[in-house]
Length: 297
Length: 269
Image 1: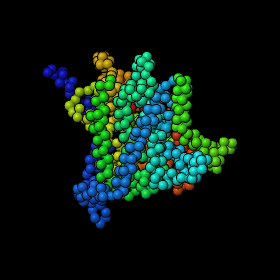
Image 2: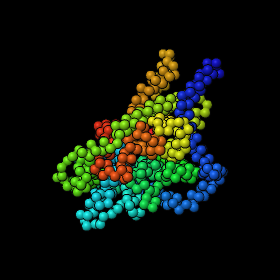
Image 3: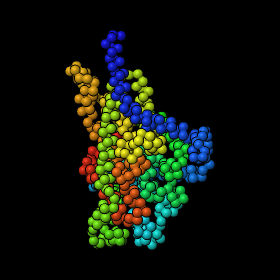
């Protein structure tokens, strides 16, 4: 190899690492190190003044598994995911099909669907508070027209989680719509024409042609919705604070509560590790499942 | 038959649209009426802007606005610098260890910063950045997502332009600045819109690392203002909420196409 080539290679290596280092340092400080530190601190007991923190191996995890609130929270979060993911995907699909069809007031419709996306979760929660407030809220007002009794939507265990779920769906459906909208616009007009010539009904056309072609988008949205079902918890701070009696508490909120309200960092760390594990599983699903979608293109 | 389905389509679409913006419309209604008129939903009750005045006097909103503005600016500048450099290194430079580091970066896409709040809080305190704008912004600057986006964008730049600039005697940084950055303008715009709206709306992390009105962003300020122990009523909360979402909402309504394109580009990668 010529001297020039060696010099060039060395130059690229130096510049490469130089350019990378600021990002690498920050990623190390705020992603990699904290992940390892979380794993580490999840294996130690909570130190008190009398009793210093000591190595307890998996005891924090065992405590969690023995904690009924933990299971309640896991159950809540699974329910939260189980409702928000399919429902927001379904609504997003309906929105996209409508927003893509030749209807009147199309641009108004699109704007209306997408607007919640640009609002902060906290603001969304405040807006919905006006719906849910017992007696005065919009829902109760509508109910009283039909002679229904006043319902404390946020204050009773049977409805609190539902109230939270509805806000989440409202917030994310319009965001998912734009991915469907983009995918719909790539479907060739020829297919529609061919279907029309064959006399295919609109329902069959949608079910047999449009939906299969949207499958990769649906998977992509599903992964995002799964991540959101861990991430979107801000509205809990306004609407229910996880209550009543933990009926609407979700995992990330519980982690926050444990660490910053109960000052129990080791158990928070154990729960964080479990959450990272689940997110890793989602990543694996995306990697092995979603990225094999090329046969559609 | 065709006209009936078309009518039903329009009807369904518009009905859903009205349901979808109803919370905003009701908030607007509540904010512009006195509390008792607001809950009675009497369409003939008088309008008032008192709620906005009361809400505005109830908290240091101007400070919150400035804080949020500073925060999104600091994050955006940090992200632009870091992701540009790293994205360029991944896209156009050859060096040992590159692929390994790239996989590490991709891993960060799935470790949400939200999940690592406990240790990140400890880190920010250790660095002495607790309750500072930099402390709120720093964990988001080396965005793996941004690095990925920039890398994709820089990969699409024709190598001939790179070579031409080099023959003209341009250094590597010069090439990056004069060739790659200008060509990636649409990506920067898309990334900026997504980043600004994400961090304008972010709540949990700022809640944890801010502790005073001096650094508190709008979302945290709004949540404190609306807390039940403050006893503010629904009209005033609505007014405060509308006030705090107004800048982003107005920007969105004006630049709607760009926003949607940006989210799309950022989402699909």
